[in-house]
Every structure is written in C-alpha cells, then in structure tokens.
Amino acid sequence: MNTLHATAWAVEWHSRNRLDGETRDLVLENGLPVLFCTRQKTRDWIEQKFGYIRQRPDLLAEPHGWRMPRPVKVVVARVNREREKKRDHGLRRSAPATCLLGNGRTG
Image 1 (cartoon, rainbow, N blue to C red):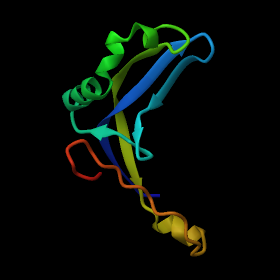
Image 2 (cartoon, helix red, strand yellow):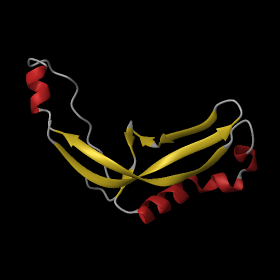
Image 3 (cartoon, rainbow, N blue to C red):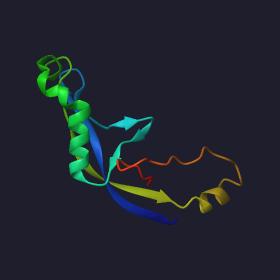
Image 4 (cartoon, one colour):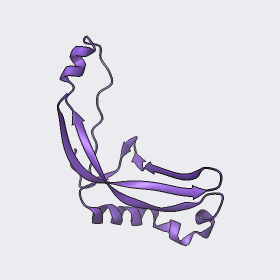
C-alpha cells in the first residue's frame, strides 16, 4: 500500500482526575483533527480557544481536572486507496476525510 506522509501540529487535550485518571485526546472540529503548519500557530489557536481554563480554578480542580491543551507533532498519512478498492471487489465505503489545516489549505 502506497502512502504519502507529512508532518503537522495538532492540539492534544488532556485532563487528570481521580475518576478517569489521565485522559489525552486530539481536539476535533467537525469530526476532524485540528491541524496547523507551525507550533506557534497551534499555540496561538490554543490560547484563543482554551485560554480561559487558566483563570478557572473550578475547571482545574476535581472533578474536572482540566489542563491547558498542548501542541503535539503528528504524522499525517494519506493511503493510496486503489489496492483497497480492488480488495473490496468494488464495494463503496465512505469517502476519506480531508483535513483543513489552520492556514486554510487542505492536507
């Protein structure tokens, strides 16, 4: 299977509390990961979207245990679907999602 790779910056949400332990997930918008070309653009977006968490002791404390999201480097891979189509004997699956990068370009 042929793949194309690219690196990008994503936003990782995390919280720590007694009920769930430590939770880490990528932040999604419209069901897709939020991706950026640079770490600084990622940090700026995090501050704009989640900056209020720093001033909210109630969200930092139990039972929420929220922490500020962090920028993380991710590898984005596009898989060549030609072989999959042959293997599926022409059965149609849902189309692959296209991610919108923070700079407005698709990846």
